[in-house]
Image 1 (cartoon, rainbow, N blue to C red):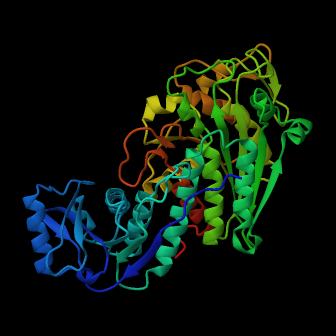
Image 2 (image 1 turned 180 degrees about the vertical axis):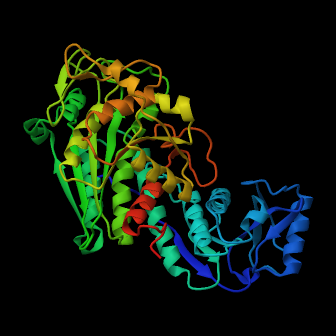
Image 3 (image 1 turned 90 degrees about the horizontal axis):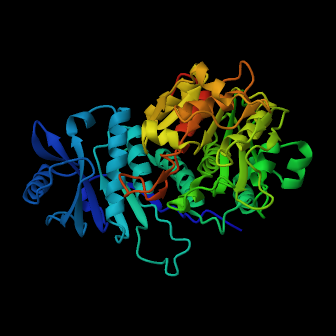
Length: 510
């Protein structure tokens, strides 16, 4: 049984003078104000902040976002040491927390926690002005402290145990919400980081089934459709893609349906637990990263679990299209024709364009329940990376649905960009043998893949496609609150979308 290994740290808050916080490390924000270095920790005395500003200047800390310097504590500070972390221009943190200011705080808190892994207790005295800023600091800190240690023989190394945020007022509900969101992101990271020797369609389905059972009140139901039933019911995309593997495909439906919910959000996640490319074999270099090709399914599942734990009054259904794409004597071949659930046929030109085939099956199934908003999320195309890089997801689809997602991403700091689906790109998917073929021309590959998926979405359905190929997995150095490996994108955006559906006209439930 595979289970997300993350156990979140204890998250608390303290009030009053941060200098009295009994922690190993006290984190304070350093930035610039009117061109000069300044420390922004409102609960510290002016003498202490001036002393820390002098130290920052002495060690060459310029207040650049994410820069960190650990220094001895001034005599009046109880903490054993102080970590100075840059947040840039302090003018942006002086009033109500804007989305940009919140993201600055998230990144600073994440950078801080990544740099103090050996400290057991960490206090954070940041310029928090409202509940949004407290939540930003908490989420950033929890995600910055994330470590994946499931397969280390010695995984009991010293690590942060407690994070205390200095904030006045009743902020515990905010911290509770932050913990739920961060736990969902961390659990998705765990699944993406899990090796394919351990995570495959059946074990993935078992893991989310077990996780659903741990949510109080039987709030979440899971239905697992195995390969025999998929074949019987005509899910040709999943059966075709999974036919080369000894480990058969699964379609997992997870449902959260609170009483009184009048809005229904459907999430469809691509879950290729390993993508070799099939007979159209990928190059060997970097193929190990293809364990992350199930990041969309991981995000769909963990988003639903978070929404259930938050108790948002919106119905959510997550469809996880799980398969392993392997080459073998039984694998689907280039020029084979498969029949997608619902009846449309597809000529397989390239077996490495498999994600759209399993998504097509799940998209058709999801629409049978008439959701108010249908979103699919997938590490779908290398063209997404070419167009938008490794940190910005592409969003395509019905303009109204697409724009809802992009607005939510702006609020929570997960970069996304609205992209078109030009009518002319679909012509490249015409087949002489079937209704469609699964690849088009190389140009505009991300847009073409969206055009292909649109063929499986009914007229009038509010649908958007999120291509998260680059942002879902970080192959480079860690930064801000983003670790190496799985990132958990786009869970925070999707939770914000659900909040907007539950509470129209407001970005939060309050």
